[in-house]
Every structure is written in structure tokens, then in C-alpha cells.
Length: 304
Image (cartoon, rainbow, N blue to C red; front, side, top):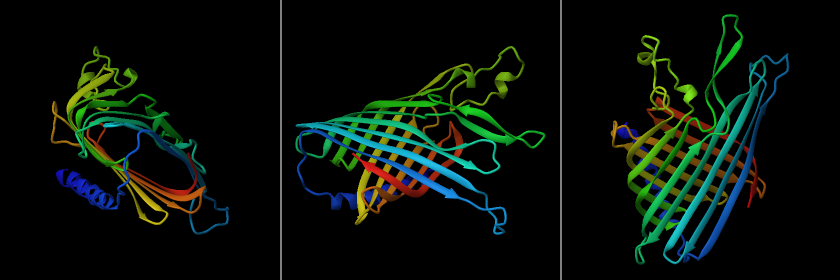
């Protein structure tokens, strides 16, 4: 685990160093800076009944929104970012449409600059949840497809906040270190409900995203590190790196939660681009394994 975390840190660090060298020296301006992008990715495959090469007809769509609204006045900065993704896929002969992507995230980071340095006294807030229900799919005794609801909006939902120190070269290059971070995990009590009158029911209960039986929230206190680096690899090809690390002082601090996202956009013209998103999450309260998400496709984009 430590080797994986170190590898991710070095990976982002390498891009951070590159981005630092490439950053222009234009002075920051007071006031609001707003920028956003909406993208729609579509993937489709179709095979007729006489196709012998194998394959199943399918269609998938993914919507994503990224919006930054940052404010600066003198030595005070306030950076905000909204990330939203939602995707569905339908494969021929499957009974249910399946969700391929679902995320809503808000990041807010305020800082007061220390003299003329790149360091700031900071306070950050992060909120994450999803838009729609999540299911585990299976089959019944007759071979019919079944699905069991496991998540939905605000279950789980994560809230982190705390003071720290921010190193900020520009809006596209910053690292925030928060050694006293409060973290809350909120869930629907329907997923944690256990009948304590049934012998052995509590022993059989597996904590739902770390939340105990018959509870609807979990509190943690630890340290967080959040890094952001965005730069241009080459003309019309940009890469955005987002890294979040968290260690809970109160329980297994050596098990660091990792959330790393890389977004690569290859611009074709004003409205078309090829988009690649890669995300890796490790959170042993959710599942003791890496969660990997990758989305690649032709995108219809609108910048604002």
C-alpha cells in the first residue's frame, strides 16, 4: 500500500514539476475568474444477426461537467471547483440499463497569502456523493437477471474540512496540506439496519462504508493532502491531475485513502474532442481493493 501511494505521489509530483516550469509569470488579478466545460461522450457498437466475429450490440453515453469559479482580492484567494459525471450503458439482451459513471463533487479552498511567498494559511472543504441509485447485478434460479440496490444519492456522502497550509503557484498548480481534518461519512439507515433481537445478526453485519449497524454516520479525524496540476502536454492536448490523500488518526492511520483522477483532453475543434478519464480509488471502508474507472470516447464539448 505504501509503495502504491508513493508511486502516485511521485507520478503527480513529476507532472507538478513540469507544470511549475511551464507556468507563466503573469501576475494574479483581483476579482472573479470563472471557467467551465460540458462534455458528452458517446460510444456505440452494432452487429447484425449474421455477424460471425462475435460481439454484442451496445450503446453508452456519459455526461460530464467541470466548473471553476475562483476569487482573489489582494492576499486572499478562494478557489472553488464543481465536478459532475453521469453515464449509462445498455447492452442488447440485458434486462437493465447499467450505470457506468456517477459522481458529484464540490471542492472549496480559501487561503490568506503569507507576505509575497507562494504559501498561504488555508481552510478547505470537500463534499462528494452521487446522483442515482447503484446496484449489484446477478441471476435468479431461473436465469433471469436480478439487481440489488446498494447505494443512492447521499448514501454514501462524504464531507471533509479543516485548516492547513497551501502552496499555490497558480490556479493550475497547488498543494494543500491539512493535518487536522474532520471527515464525516453519511449513509441511509436502511442499509445499516440490523434486528438486534436476532441471535448473531450483529456478528454477521459488515460495516456499510465504515458505518456501524443501525447508525447513519461515521466521524473520522485525520490528515489530508490535496494536489492539483493542470498543464498542456502539447498543442491541443491538456492534462489535469487531481490527487486526494487521507489518513484517519483514530483508526488504522497506515491505511491511507487514495483518490487520484487524470483527465486528458485532445481538442479537435471548438466543439469536438477526444476525452480520456482515469480514476483510481482506495478506501478500505468501502472495499479492500482498488476501484478503477476509465472512460474514453469522442466528446461534444461546450466551454463557458
